[in-house]
Length: 603
Image 1 (cartoon, rainbow, N blue to C red):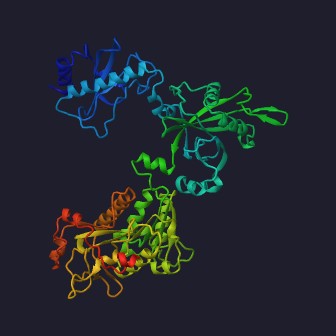
Image 2 (cartoon, one colour):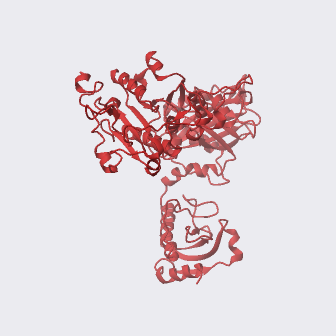
Image 3 (cartoon, rainbow, N blue to C red):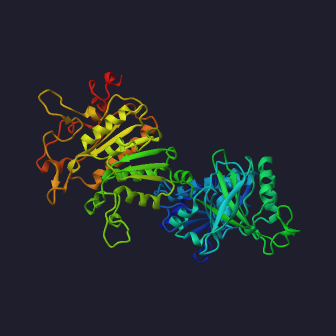
């Protein structure tokens, strides 16, 4: 029995209370259902106590994907989730587990959802789903598109800048007037300043409670409809501002006007859409003045819709499931090598407002396979023919400004001790400090400096161990001083030398390697180890920001020790601990007599 027969047989047997009749659709008639279906059949059902006929289409990969449903006889009007080809959108395949054992049951379960969509659409006069889907409906009428950076939380009518894309004439870029558009246009759209044509656009935030049906395909609003809709859904303050702006229309807008509208969906979301007014013969003139069409309409006027593609950082973070809690945060990353470059990249992706990068080192070819940057960033562009290595911080700045233009990147290509001595950073403006240099004595000096500040931000240290046996993240100054980097370095008895208590390697071993003599020594670990540690740093920052980490713990991840042991090295007793024990003992490293963070010293 093929999949079609099996499905129909199941529906006839178990779906009698829903499906009254089934009729096969010949293969020659399937082309009208333009969604790549292999089989189709009509079903007679009852909706709102009346008969209705739907078409069920089975895709080629059914039941791995859901069946299609069509209102092919156009029995239902303009309702949400009913597409132009009469396809009924009732759910999404994403993250949906389909029980492929019973294809007929899949159809019946989906049919119940389809019936609910149709009944709700027919009985709800001001269906909120129309607002949720407004932008989708609007875009179906558009051949024009605007890329925008607009503060949607600002509920005031105001002027924006709109730039015409010279390449096609139907693509715009819209931003707030105080935004520096040229660098963003050059980075994102690869346009030079000379190519940009700027005009005025007006942002119109409609008042809460506004409801309207979106225009159906091919039946766009007239100018009268558009004007009435805008003027009837503005509060008095914004209406007065709009009329004042329209009374001062720039000469450059004498044949075109551009409006960007915000339609509230709920208290947090807005539908954004735009329209262009085109006056082929210009506006009406009274004496030397032109009169805006909202006051007196010219003989010829066209309304051209355009859809909105948002570029603002907060929206993009929400759209991708990211967290917007860092958009006003400022971080300092000390050391942008294998771990630090990845941490800095993660902070930029998290939407940090400002990231300060501190590192005195140059990017070298030998760094590439553990670094975030590649071969193309090793040498700086310069007018001379001499090759000049880039500072790591400058190379990262160029990369971030290209990829994440909403984050401000500050670079300090100096040693951290110089930065501290010369007071080059206002620490009161910093939310997080991340130290990724892997040099214990330097990190101890940072630790002492930060503990002397009156209100230090949390300082997070990170480092990896050789040959993949693990990595560590130490949280300090997380709302308390007790527990710091210095606490990790002490002997457990008078007979022992100072050692790192967190280490997974037994003390007294050397792991540095050299491939070319003095000056080429390094600690062997792979990009997997640096990425694992960087990810742990980023998750730690998130947890600290949410108050999910209390105090100042040492957080470690354990890798496979096989490669480490094969080379004749020995692991420490801490490595032998289980993950559960490591977590349980994360605060036990605290030294009650620490010269930096002990209660005695802090007084």
